Length: 361
Image (cartoon, rainbow, N blue to C red; front, side):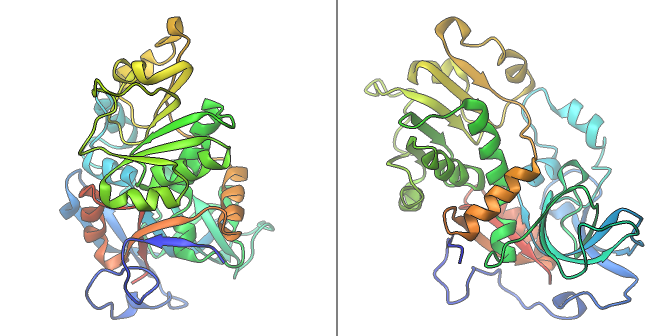
């Protein structure tokens, strides 16, 4: 049975947003329905631009599958796309790629836990009733009651014992952390500093770096320090009380510094990097990405940035770890799809711990 942390001690498994969930949206999709509900963004802006809309239900093309979405996270990436809030220098590139005045694919969401309900002609890998975790990537589309994907997309079987909410909270942070830890080649015994250690990405970094045998220090708010230590950090630093990069009394150095929230750059991190150290910039502007190939080379340092990959074998590994209880999902709050605006508001607040998850309703 997978273990999970939540930010609430209510009697339910996960803290739920207040308010009733009624009507057809509250249950499973009715067979033969010609429409389905989705959260749609037609223009960039705050959470208020998201609308719950009814969309026509397309047929399943050959080679594709239909997945009934049970749970899907609202990630920091979804928030940034919705608001066109991107690192310095990336705004024009983002609009050219995703849409100028609003996203061309208005239904956001890059991963979904659900059940296959229909397969197109020629599909043999999946059949109706299969419990799966799907990563849609640049296709988006997961913030909906259902999802169409090519059968050869990043879709993996969900192990028994791994619930939909846990699975939905797993891949975004887990894939990001896996990608960058691999790029940084973290070794047993190395000292790793994680900035933003209590978020969806940071909690995955803490756990997976610890699994590699690293000694982890997490930067987070005091209210999240116990959680971060439970996940494997040897020490935590309250960012409100102390800045390890500007404090003249700070003399420690780390082999790997991971900035999961876009708070630092190489010039600030350099004094805190040990010889041969690596700075991982998960959120990085255009100039930072262009400079990372040569920054720090003369000092024996390396700066790592860029887009995290989505590999099927990594999703399988993450699911297996979670199903065995060796990787804990951290769920901040669960909202019904009908409250998708509130879910985005929670992400925008900067106060969430781990993942915010939508479920059908």
